[in-house]
Amino acid sequence: DAGVIQSPRHEVTEMGQEVTLRCKPISGHDYLFWYRQTMMRGLELLIYFNNNVPIDDSGMPEDRFSAKMPNASFSTLKIQPSEPRDSAVYFCASSLGQYNEQFFGPGTRLTVL
Amino acid sequence: AQTVTQSQPEMSVQEAETVTLSCTYDTSESDYYLFWYKQPPSRQMILVIRQEAYKQQNATENRFSVNFQKAAKSFSLKISDSQLGDAAMYFCAYRTLLNSNYQLIWGAGTKLIIKP
Image 1 (cartoon, rainbow over the protein chains, first blue to last red):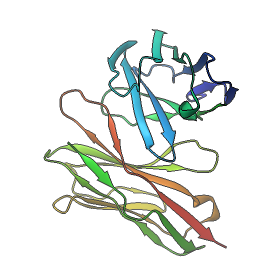
Image 2: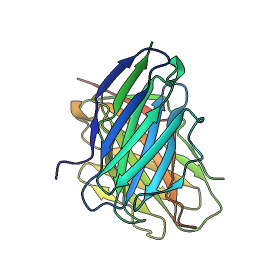
Image 3: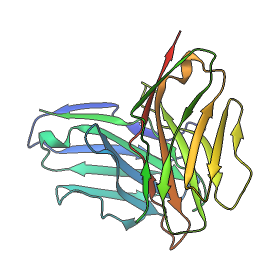
């Protein structure tokens, strides 16, 4: 299995631009999680899905952030408009069932200038 | 609310020696999962070991083992025969089994340095 796939691995953009991060979970997994990691705040859960349905988006920092999961094999996290304080590493993770561990993707390092 | 505390921002150990990373947590629940994840410089978060709270036996994975003290709410990770490849950030995490809440509560992490 290829594991969780994220793209791009690195993204550099200018303030005000739209940014879209992509994730392909492990095939067959029914939970998908989006995290943000910064030095200041550590690892934060932004949103998670179960069977493509958003379950808890209370971690999404503000309306500029949105996430979708149109099917079981693809999810996006969009930031519009982006701001320098959004600079972070964004991880996607997936798991099978409620009791199993989360498998993480390699992350996307986002830099907003 | 549950919290996870890793009191050691950084630890160092000589190659081939043993090191223990500490983790404490706060919860009123009786059943839950605890995890140790490793994040090397490549940034990939890798599961090291998992412990179910209802199991008294400490989990072990090769050179990695835990000391799970449920009453003390302590979940330390022991790495035996440390190797250079063990150098990474280590995160302790907690997950409830109640209310279909699948969030992981994360500690702040411990940076492990391996001295050759």
